[in-house]
Image 1 (spheres, helix red, strand yellow):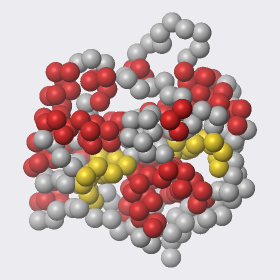
Image 2: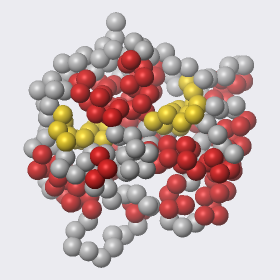
Image 3: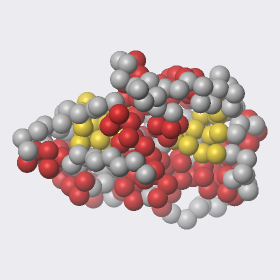
Image 4: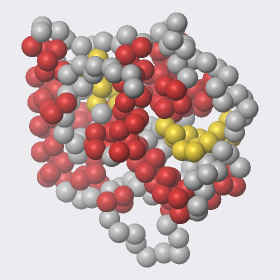
Length: 263
């Protein structure tokens, strides 16, 4: 297993270094076993692209999105003010994250508390690295493989970000598939609004089952997304339909990381 040392913001500051970017890992990226693989893959990409970055490590807390969506505004504001002070202490100006929930919170909600940052989602950042020539891909990786893309709500409808993910996928396959409900009409995975942390409400079918049926109908062998919450729900959907041997589920970061061309 290749070992890559991930820089920690506090250690960098102790050495008199001020990294250009903060990689905000997020709760799922830190604690969920499946999402940890995405975190590692992104750190690998940042390493090979020679990006000047660091993570907060033990100084990182939840951005507060789930508790705000669950209705606990006071706890959300406590989280926000605490995080803003930590970011101020480390003079953070640019934040990269692969979680659209964290992205939306930092970009659109921390501004209410004077938390002003340049916030970049991983898909935009990956595309930037490739366009600048800092990252090269083996473009034959999935050349003849059908890849369906699921639009995360907090990238799509919340922030009107649809194209970067598709451009990245088109770099590694010539058979990208659009689900019948996509872009602004995409179906939610069922995790947003803190729904992932509560029991299902009454109804005929859970949202993640409805969504995975869209994927099955597309006849795609690979399902790509760009959100760790979506990853959890869609993986559950694949298991529920007993399709583990037929459909593989990846974050776009993982697909890019797997096929980095190292000179």
